[in-house]
Image (tube, rainbow, N blue to C red):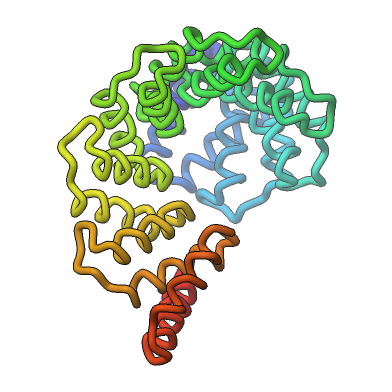
Length: 332
């Protein structure tokens, strides 16, 4: 929070500047009890910066026991004097029911107050309410407007969602050029969903020239950030020799990683690879294990593959395969 304190300090009136600076210095040094005393004295005098910082301390239990109701009161005092961060925190507390009952109307009101003052997290929160239709009518037009405010200031998740809005024609005509532009901006900030979508666009050639090398690059970027579906896509591209030389061993490595991260499509692929010995030693028991795991995930095609494979295995092999699948499912 240090940057936030410094930012707010610049807004502080000259009266009490030295005292506020001392309180902030105490906070940064970890002298929370001293900081609490300094902020309390200034807050009681109506200093809106001290009110905000004191609210943070009560909400996070710094130098005192957590007191969410008092934090809410302090945030409200600060917000009423024009501090957008305080208004946003009030909105979040009403949104999540922290120190008060959940109140969607109050949350919306305070998010809107902060958003109209240009506070990016509030703009994103307000847009998301419109985008999801949270306790009010869904409105993609308003969502797009508020996401764009935040996106223009570099907010990666807003950039991603603007890409989705244009790609899926949500309240606007479908425009893959705009979708690509917004996904690219977010992807450059390590937004994994945007990286995955760029990979999908490059591999399909929708809205951009097909390029397997670029597709693999972006799928890998998302995969390294932990996106299971992207990990499966990387494996598929290695298996097909798209964007890189065909490499079954590398493909199965990515499928196994995707399986550990819960991507259902990787289960059947692993079963296929073990059944045919692609990149691994042929192992029908291991194949049965993965087909059973896929069937447990309600993949209809996997149920058929289980039935076909069981007809080829001994009773002992079937029992072993079922045991392996049960053990894996218990662990995951």
